Length: 205
Image (tube, rainbow, N blue to C red):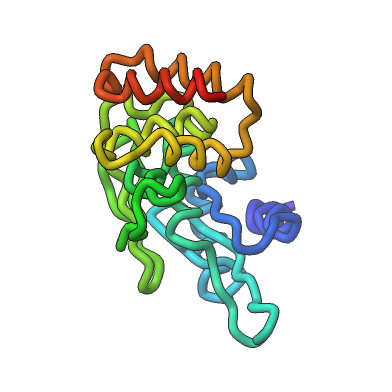
């Protein structure tokens, strides 16, 4: 079986609309033969190049099957981070909005990462990945990570303990989890101004 046939066989087993790096196919033949196969498949509409080195199988819209979409800019950013082993989390403003600390959603999708700063564009979608200090990426996608990032961008004087209670309810945390996370966050130097309110949250739980 030729490299081109192997590429097509693997592609046919892959989920539509999910981005992947082309170099994950390099084991099927020489790098040149795989790149040539992808170039031909892009022209045939079998796959779409969504970013440098990343592709996706087009996915028909359920309501309009004749219209096909590819991966979103956020999905491509996540695939890029996964490939390189970078941490990738929603920025603090997004966390603050989701937790109810702010009423206005961020105008632009921004991720914080320990990888390099860059942008991903898919059609009209623009996603920014912003390099940031490692200490702000702790606990990645865990509830305490979301709280950490939300608190980092929110002035303590603008949030009451009752607001913190509602935030942990949004995260579906039980009483023991709230106590543990309150202590965790309260011990961090970068949240020193929040220590008093975090202690009140722990005591009120």
